[in-house]
Amino acid sequence: MGSFLRPLLGALLLATSQLAALPAAQAASDPDTLTRARPAPRPWFRPRHVVVQTGGGLGMVAAGTGYEFWNKRTEADVLLGFVPGRYASGSSLVVISAKAMYSPPAWTLPLGKAWEVRPFTVGAYVSHTRGNPNDGKRGQYPEGYYWFSTNTRVGPLLGSRLTHVLPAKASENPRSLSFYYELSTNDLYLISYVQNTRGLGLNDIAVLSLGVKVDF
Image 1 (cartoon, rainbow, N blue to C red):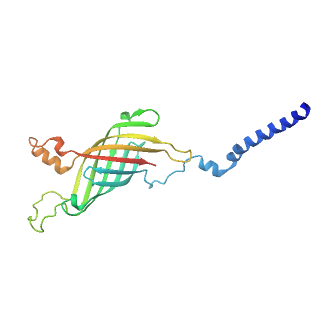
Image 2 (image 1 turned 60 degrees about the horizontal axis):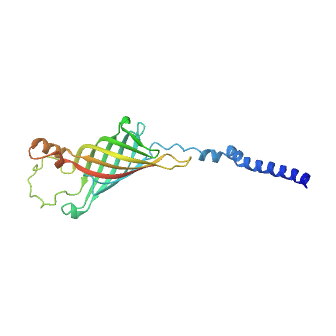
Image 3 (image 1 turned 90 degrees about the vertical axis):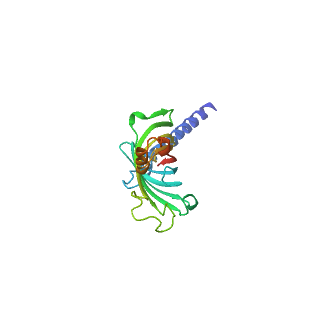
């Protein structure tokens, strides 16, 4: 019996080793497998992330998309915001905005393998509001009463973010989910503050926004 089992076991072990090596050989010779094993290069015009936020003078709710430059330290976003009429003196407002943010490399703090904090981000924004921010009667103010633009604002941004690196397959680009806050102001608020430093504080001209950003 032993002389009969030994050849049988040897043949079984040989067949098992051949089957185990077959998938690896097919993967090495299959061009589709090689293509899936590495991320395909993305076109330059394809956005790198999406953002959704509330507040910040860019709408009660604003959403948009953006790009990243210089090793993901500089970002440029375009957002579309909305303010319902009951919160905007009667007329619904649509806010179109663009913003740019920069995060210094030395200011990234890792929290384990999947989390990191960027405690300091700085940037600027410009926004344009479609609608009538002041629903007063037509002609109630003389021409030139408002010396400033009532629908276009520019201002600085200062914020921070917490980022979680999402699991990704070998065939996918790195993904991450970030939660951020930003403090901002605008040109009109800054002028009012400079002209009335005794009556206004920084807390009177600062606007808070909270948002979520997904890289893909």
